[in-house]
Length: 432
Ligand code: FES
Ligand SMILES: [Fe+2]
Image 1 (cartoon, helix red, strand yellow):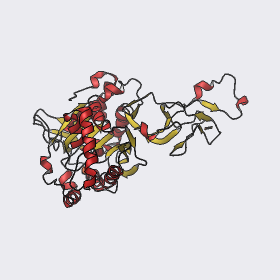
Image 2: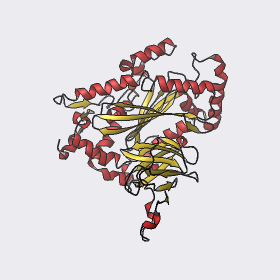
Image 3: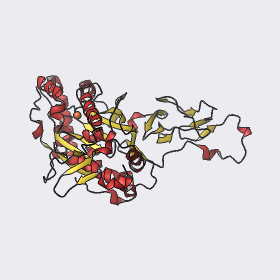
Image 4: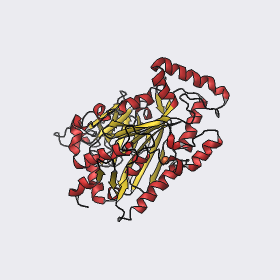
C-alpha cells in the first residue's frame, strides 16, 4: 500500500455507510506509520499509582515498545523512566517488580536512586572532571502526567495536556473512581496474554456490545443458570457516546449484580445490608442520578488508542502493546475500592477471572473472533469491513457501532495528520 492512499483507508459517507479498508489490519508500512503517528504521539497509559503505593515500589514494564520503570521515589512522587543505563545502555532494572532505594546496573555498576539521579559511579576518578553527573540521570519520557491515579506518558513533547487530551473521558473515569469511599487500589497481580491479531481488533471489540449474544453464548447460558436474564441483549437499555479525541463509552443497565452496589437475587441474603448501605452512602454523596449510574449501570470505555476501563462486576483496566501488525500483548488489572468486604472482593476477583480473564467466559471467545478476522484478512479480494450499524440514528444504542466509528475517525485523522495532537483542535466532539 502506498502512503499517499491514506485518505482511502476509511469510507465515511453522507449516506451513513462507514467502511474500513481491511489492509489497516495487515499492512506493514501502515503499521510503521501507526507507531509514529499514534503510539509515539498520543498520551499512552503506563499504570495506576496504586500499583506502587509506597516509596521505593517499582514495576518494570513495556509501554509502546519502550522498556520503562514505573517507580515511587523516596519523597513519594510517582516517576516514569526509560529502563536504559546512561553508560552503555543496558537495562538498569532487571526485576519485574519490587521495592528498592536504588537501581544498580549489573553491567558496570552505575547506580541511580529512585528519583533517577546517578549516585554511584565505580572507579569514578578515571572519568574526566568535565563529566557532569547531573546530566547522567535516568531519562524520563518527554511527558508524564496522571488523572485520578491513572498515569500516562507521551513521547510527543508538543502534545496538549493530559487534561485536554482526555476530554469527555474524565467524567467517566470520575464515575468509576468515585465509587470507592476510601479510594481505589489495584488488586495484586495482573493477567497477561497474547493474540495473533491486530491490536485495533481488540480496541473496537472492547466497546462492541453487538457481538455479545452470538459470540458469548456460553456465558449467557451460565448467567441464565444463576437467574440473570440477558436473553434480549440486542435491546439492552443503554447508549454509546463520543467522548472526544477518539475516546468512547458504552453505558448500559447492568443485567448482573455489582459489588458497587446493585443487589442480585443470586447473592447470599446476608450481603444485602452492606450493598444497600454502600448504595445509600453514594446517593448521599453524589445525588440520586449519579449514584444510580455508579451502582446500577455498567460501562465499557475506550481511551484512545489502547486503554480500556470495563466497569462490570469487576473493574478491569486493560492495555495492549502491538509488536507487529498481526500480534498483540495484553495486560489486565483489577481496580477495586480499598477496604471492601470479603464478599465483595471475592465477587470481584471471581468476575475478573471468569469473565474478562484470559481463561474466562468472554476473552477466549473474543480472541477466537479477532484471530478469525485476522486469518480471513488474507482474502484481500474482500476489501472492506463494515462499521455502519446505527449510523442513521439520532442516538446510538449500546449495540450500535457509533463507538467504533469514533475510534476509527480519530485513528484516520492522526494517521494523516499527527500534528493534530499539538493543539486543542484535537478535541473533536465531546458529549456529557
Ligand atoms: S551499561 Fe550500565 S554500567 Fe555499563
Ligand atoms: Fe466479547
